[in-house]
Length: 404
Image (tube, rainbow, N blue to C red; front, side, top):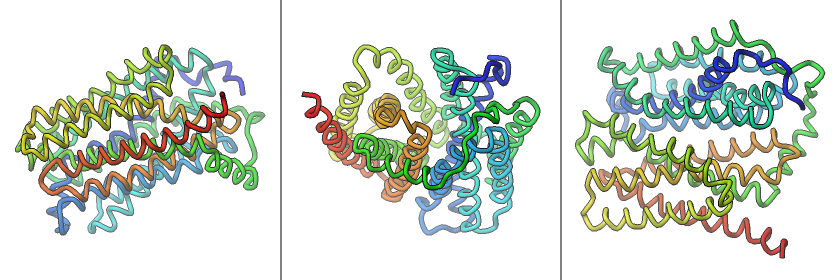
């Protein structure tokens, strides 16, 4: 489908809007980190690790929703689907704010994740509708640069909120405000970008066939599973970051700054990857990245088991792991999408579902293994990286043999 002849907004505002849609998801995850100890105390959870479920539940909701938003938007248009998702996000945020039990809070977070799936999916669809080729790449690249700021700043925003109003309810209230601002922006400034003549009817049989083809295409599902494992290791770090910095390294006051320094490496990785991928190709970078993240964490695990772990070593080696993750995520996703160009929207939804839900569950399992040391996290990185490397190797091998 050709892009709309008229962008939805002026270029600069459009980029900012796309970035805001993308950032809502990252903010909903990382702003929670400073509040986890309060959730553990207020709900009298058995262990501090259980509080991590507020992140995993959100991701599960987001992952599941991706299976539906793409087809709905192709049928009914981008604007009503985005508005509906944002309304659900806000309503679920209000429910989370007033939750009086941990079960209610988790249910609200699942619903909030389902609502957040709309801006996540619609960001790419809106860019595709309004721009094409290099101009679309420029839009997404600029939006990604803005988006990268959110994981860096969100924990600090959460910490400042707790200092100003020492109650975790206000953190969820801040998400309601962010969702409301995005909804207002959408209603006021975003016209429909998908013309009626380009809309597709909802055909359950065709949709089922496309999803079935996605999960039975070896190279697509193989790289999607490898991506889920790599993202799962990264989510394990996010889930347990607050406990590691506070309980292992006694860095409560500097937690948000140290976390931000590590998070910054993903932005640097995205920039470097954009320069290297044209020279070396995504496959070489993907396999090299999987090898590198395994080797880095084998060394890191050796330091931890030898009792030589320190804050400096953790910052350097975990920063290297997160940097490598920043390169791997883009390349593994592209490798999974490569054979699915004829059903790109459906394939993207399925890959998003597998990687988001899979990584949420894997990350939660890693977080629950926290025992007062970094060993469970680093050991999980080693195992997951080696598994992902093996899957990527055997996924690619038939293609290599077939090309001889």
